[in-house]
Length: 452
Image (cartoon, rainbow, N blue to C red; front, side, top):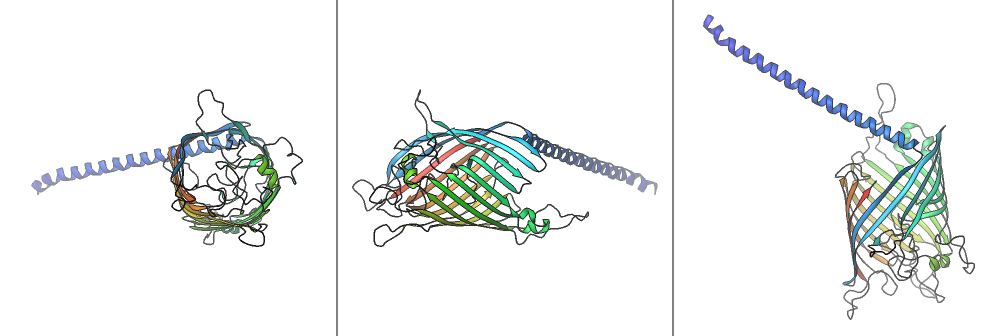
């Protein structure tokens, strides 16, 4: 018996030592996890404090610097192959924020571009690298005052970015309206449980003046002033959202629906295209892609109906899957030839993307594919995407990746051709080979941009 006890004693001591070691390791793990949790809480508190201070700051500088390589081949012939740069620098601030009212301002200048005819192109900010001693064009593209009441009513005055929901089929994201904008969020009036299923019900309107490069109104020789009126109604639906209650009886903030549908209906009216085409450039092309009448002016007027639908999957994840369709129809388009024929009044952009909606962390990404079809008189070419204009169809792949907290790399690959080969547009026939590459173009853009 004594011998057995002597043999078991070292084993018991070893088990006790192992138990102590396990306990120490578990305590160390808990201390490490607690330290990590404390760091995350402190980081979140600092971010919240920074956001609060930023909202109360009278002036804050922001902007971005972009560098890219831009290649365009039309009909298998090199049109240009060059490095380009872009600069945005702005100042914004909150002048008043009290009693559910907020008054902000925003002023920004950017690199400005002239088209081949020497006219300013308001949708282009990328410039080829200038030679030594050559001046670079800079202009103010944003100066606005914004008033918000209870996050429900918003009024904007000045020159402001496009408030529209949708793609760049109608207005390029670089384009800024000059005039007034109003927005009302009706979902703010719904019970909280219902507003989770209908997260947005919004009406937006814009009244603007389009020939922005002139000081004052355009020359009185124009038949009508370049006036724009537009409106959109937007409704977001998350049908599988099932709000849960906390133990205190309040609605939990966690979103649980993986599906959301967005529907937008819009109407856009333009007048005075002759005033626009006489003093605004069309970007990379030498002349307008709209159909011209015998007088050399754009043949069609513009009353454009719009529908935009967007389906979001994996809504609770940071990397979402989004599919969209954006369709336009110009009700005032005229036949291309007198007495009948094609009216060139339709356009659409359809695509799918996978990735983050906003880049917030390193290695955030977004990959997309889209197909577009834009007839010549569907929209005014001075205002939509630099790649599109009108009289074009094709597809595009795009990828953007956040390499550093403020540095993003991107690549875009576009293949297109003229929708109507008899009208102006991207894609020139290869010399002495009009049947092989008529109206085709290949465009590649690779670059980086730095936010600050």
